[in-house]
Length: 124
Figure (spheres, rainbow, N blue to C red):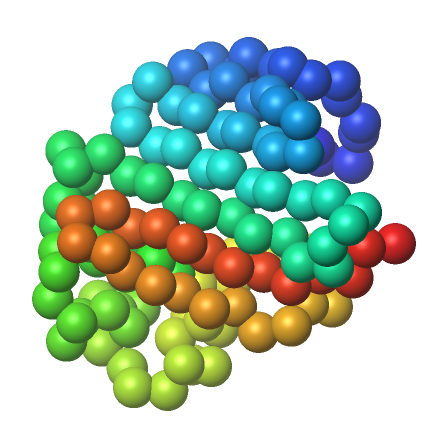
């Protein structure tokens, strides 16, 4: 984090970060949960993001507005709906940090829970 390595578990305010087997769990008392699985036996890392129903229609970003309305899923921070995926993703860029090379990200929205963010990474 911020260029430094930390051991787990870590409690940062209302957020607990811990490792359980081959999973990293990030849980916030205000309704956010991120679970990432990884392992040497698989070249894939799979992350799932869950948001409490209390946030229905109150989110924004790469996971959408979380209101079950597909017509506004590609809304930029300026509240403009775009059709091009690259324009949408670029609109949410923060800072100038460089990310590792990765395969495309697949986003799936399921009923009242935003889940299943899949990222493929080479295991080094």
